[in-house]
Amino acid sequence: METTISLSEKTQHHYQESHFDIYRRFPLTLVEGKGARVYDAEGKEYIDALAGIAVNSVGHCHPLVVEAISQQAARLMHISNLYYNIPQSNLVKLLSKLSGLDRVFICNSGLEANEAAVKLARKVAKVKGRTGKIYSFDNCFHGRSIATASMGKEIYSKDFGPLPEGFAKLPYNQPEALDAITNQDIAVFVECIQGEGGVVPAQRDFLEKLQQKCIETGTLLVIDEIQTGMGRTGKMFAYEHFGLNPDIVTLAKALGGGMPIGAMLAKEEVAEHFKPGDHGTTFGGNPLACAAAIAVINALVEDKLVKKATDLGLYLKSKLESLSEKYDAIEEVRGIGLMIGVVFDKPCRDIAMKLMQQYGVLVSCTADKVIRLVPPLVISKEDIDIIVEAFDQILDSEN
Image: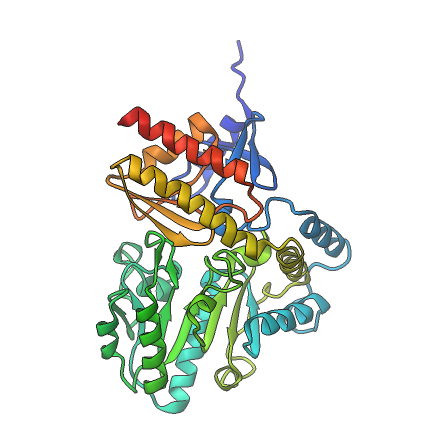
């Protein structure tokens, strides 16, 4: 008698048989999404409080994004960067206007955007005769390439030496540590909220001193907005909360609404040091991804989702803070807008598993003890109530 294998089992078997074993996947096969809901291969519905790790900010399959992709796919998908294309031209102008930065380079991912920023910073340094370091901060995350992994936590680089020279880390949220930056240093990369580091917001005095120190020493300020950008924190870019004036900004994730795309933005006096041949990409800036990104920005504006991130973020945070007063297991609730971290007193992957399997809520566990909540900005108060109630029931059962 033949054994019937479900679509979910078949999918997971193919992965286990043929894919590199590099992801700690949850045992779940998703096949459809709409708004803040996703559905597995057996038809079960879930509230998506992860949004593809802060990617699906305008929700799954937003009508504007679906229409833009469909129309562009039927017309022109790829031509390389040897020629001009209209969606790319429109997107770079739009991003320049939104950010106030002069030049935009379109690539395929956040890692590529950060790699481009490293190269640009080093080109500027070479022209100006600066021979110092590129700084980042403890527990940061800027990607998994050899260069960007060298900037992050040791866990991402320890097995891949020899690592490139010229990178160093400083303590996060310690203003006095910034005195190490000198007029020979090249750049400082910073996240206004460390996502992979545990959803840790930067302190205002820390960022203000960093801005001042970069100006005093002529060191480039590079802000990684890959997870925080495009409305996630209640501003289009998180650096706006702190009144910062970055030299370079990197974007990805929510920019494409699910289509792979990244961007590096820079001031003219920085960008001008890149010359033809210094950098490039085959797929980056293709008409299809750029059309999707324009539709995402239009959806953010038309649906007033940036303001919604502020309002719903405050609502979610207050509800979770009430739980933290009720349960000692919650040590802290932190974040800005709809980028919230719930810090537990022990590793929390089992809580994430229970939320998924028993309550139909998708989250992730980061920095071992932090549940990260980065739902689509279209999520409703009703869905937030369901999420908080699920936390409540799990914690009550373990109390």
